[in-house]
Image (cartoon, rainbow, N blue to C red; front, side, top):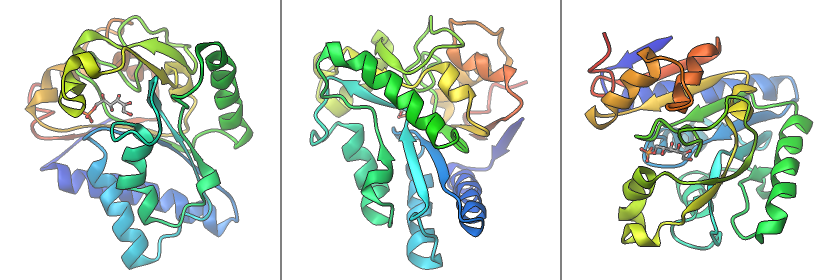
Length: 247
Ligand code: F6R
């Protein structure tokens, strides 16, 4: 289903509340909540609201385990552009999540170690019983995670090559496209699909064209987000701008 909110703020609060209610339900049962997390501009206000819920309304992350979708490769965690830095700054530094519960693909590995790491990442997700809720943004190539055009529906966590448009869209953060890594480690489409609940968010007219293709277009590896049409557990959460081309 597609839900259109008047603006990004209201939509982000809705998503944060959904995540908080899963955390609280699990807490009540003495269980762990497993969150699949995204970076980028899109989820920032969701994280902001989760931090507020922690600081002002007692939401605890003690029983939360997180798996991030992706990380650039190669990438040092201390680099300002790393997704480790992003997550610390926007969420983890401000809540009570145990550090050992945080999982982000490792951008520091030598290339011969990457495949074993990716297999272990998949295994760890299933050892925790799978992802309860996965949040996603969408790239202008139609990527989810860094599953660029051509990605298979059953793909797992792996090393991928970033699309030129994706690197161009990231060039501002890196001070020029030539500084954007050409690769990334990403959960696969298949990994994402195993989550019990998936929320894809998109804001602004800038995303309207790709959202139209993702929601209404023919299902194809050319736009990996179209695979989400095949899942019963997906909610597209949009603001009016991102929804503006939907029929
Ligand atoms: C980030 C990720 C990407 C982004 C997408 C949109 O972890 O997996 O798929 O969600 O590139 O990025 P923003 O939100 O910056 O428009």
